[in-house]
Image (cartoon, rainbow, N blue to C red; front, side, top):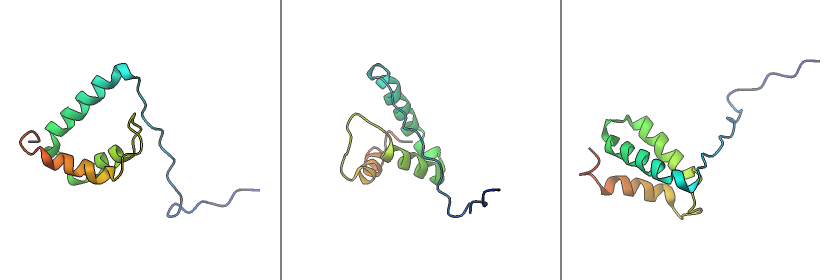
Length: 84
C-alpha cells in the first residue's frame, strides 16, 4: 500500500546540522565573519536576514546568550564605518 502524499505547505524542512568547529579553527570562523561584515551593505536584504537568522541559531561555545538575534542586529549597526 502506498503512503499518502505529504502536504508540502505544512511539512517541516529537515533540521539542519549545526556547524561545529574545533577551537583551533576559531580564527577562520572569526575571519569569515569579519569578511562578511566588510561586504554587508553589498548583500541583499534577504541574504542579510538569512545570515542573521543563522547566526542567532548556530552552535557556539557561548551558548544561551539572551536576546541574541537583537544583539546581532545591534552589533551590525554599531560599526557602520567598518561595514561598507
